[in-house]
Amino acid sequence: MGRSRHLVAVVAAGLLLTSCANGSGPGPALPEETRAVGASPTTKQPPADPVGLIGSWTVTEVAGAAGGILRIAPADQGGLSWFGPCGVSTGMWRAGADGLFVADLSEHLVPDGPECRPGPGRTPAWLRQSTAFRLEKDIPVFLDEQGRQIARLLPGAKPTPGPNLLPSLAEPPVITPEVRQAFPPAAVLPAQLRPLSRDDLRGRWVPAGRDSGRAHVELRDDGEWRGSDGCNGQSGRWVAGAEGALLATAGPSTLIGCDNVPLASWLAKTSRAGMDGEVLVLLNAQGTESGRLARG
Image (tube, rainbow, N blue to C red; front, side):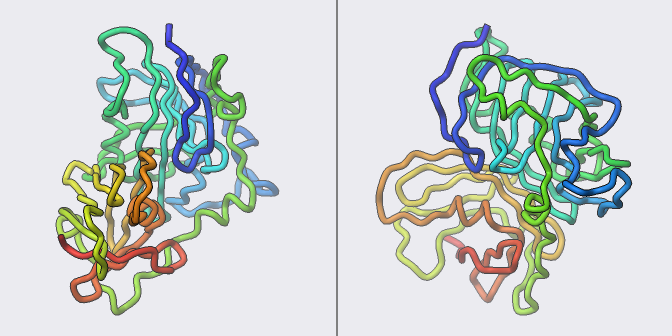
């Protein structure tokens, strides 16, 4: 039996109470609640439309791992929730029209037992390995860096919220026109910026053109990033693709006040990045600059 947990703040997911309950139950068809308002079920979507990931899904075809329910929702509807064998975990996800995908579970409640221990590192291996996706007739398929299938999601899952999880965070996410507008294709990288490969992006970066103290971010080879805003430890996951594509998540952080640099926010908003001389320029989906980094 899981143990209750205090109210936690989940990045980009609002306030919620976690629970150790989970549920199951794939359905035969994509629920109407997960379709865009006014859209026909036969509306043709781009092959990698991130909106196609939104829903409550039963995770199947995962080698060597137990299944569960993955709820993928817009940030204001709860973000990412995993109802698995070790209870409920919540976090952040990002995806692009180019097929890139990254997700991280940063808040966990697990039942007693040596196989289910609380703390970081509880994101399932298959989810950490998922760096891309495709849609096969409205069925999302997660892929690894080599393009190999990691998992297949089946629609119609019905997670059980339990007594300490807000009921709305177990309901099917709703896709509205506003939700669709929140997932635009990323603007093209400006010609004056040079895209970097994933290998070139790895390593330690600091805010460019300022005395940032201890503020830094390290993009690691395993897809994790760690750093500091100058006072508070920060972390998340990242993935890079062609033409300067760069997506990252950001987990919870301590709130020590100082003259800090919001590096986690910069990364969580970034859709593309490119070098301007010796400076890495971070751009959001609209092509607006969110931050600048230099090697450090």
